[in-house]
Image 1 (cartoon, rainbow, N blue to C red):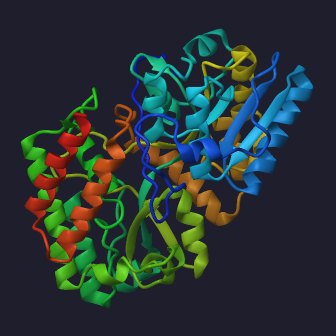
Image 2: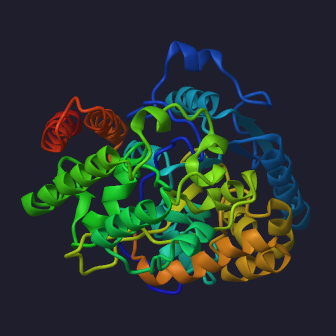
Length: 446
């Protein structure tokens, strides 16, 4: 790491319409009848000698490239790997069973909303000693790219790819309206005024940014005031009453904009079956919020001239609110028979240029600067926009907050449902936030 590896704090992830994967509720790894019946590709067995089992979820493209990278490393270092992979849900179900039997693979793919549970149950190793020894080389990785792997006083996961939540906008529509393109330091009032101006001059709407992923809309705003979504111990929220009132105002603005016709109607937006139907993708919306990893797809569905900028912050926000989110990690489990070799393999996986040319950023933008530059050289013009944006957005990011509580997914579901109710006129913005916080505090206390 370029900065001293210290107590850095992790980020959170929520799969959504355009997210990285579908999630299931699982506060902590635990066994179940369904988990016991599932199995990964490659027969499950006890680790023998120094063979290291590696587990991940993903499609065939990811699987082929991942095996290729590990096999190349194995040939060069005399290591031996066995591979276990499956669909997202089956992957976590199988890990739950393996964790009970203390038969976890040596290297597993992780996400931030499962992270804390595995660490608190002693299932993951602190990787700090391997970083200090050089076995896990993070010298080419800026802290903002890898800080999500920190938890309390340890480092438990190496980012395999990075995303950032963005505001995408249609450059052609802005030019047609004669409206100035958004800056990277804009505020919420700027966003509201821009959406209204675009609609007034062209009749073009903006996607309702509160629908689908409201947590990711408000979290950077909360951070812009030097506060956090959750407290460090994960038992409470990390923001004060003044910030709560500002959250209510943002949700109220979204309702008002929908009523004015400036935002896409909730009934229409919630019926989009997939990303190809989104207004920002079809050219029927001027702006929309989503992950940077989706930019190339969104641009390509109907050949839209899209650009990206940061999310707007609270008008009184004075700190950097954005953060880079690890799409996935590689973690070493406490069951690994050869942690040193596992650390070297992960180091190769994230740093080797030839390996990453085959992986081709499939899990997100790589943390290694050398690798990013190598992939950017061979990227399409649209993909180069993503690399360029990731380079520039770092200026507006700071390290991630505390790893999300294991039960936080339930809190997010409450917020999603409440915001939907607001947009349908069934709940006020104040009731939405009050209910979300009350229910969440009950969830987090258990």
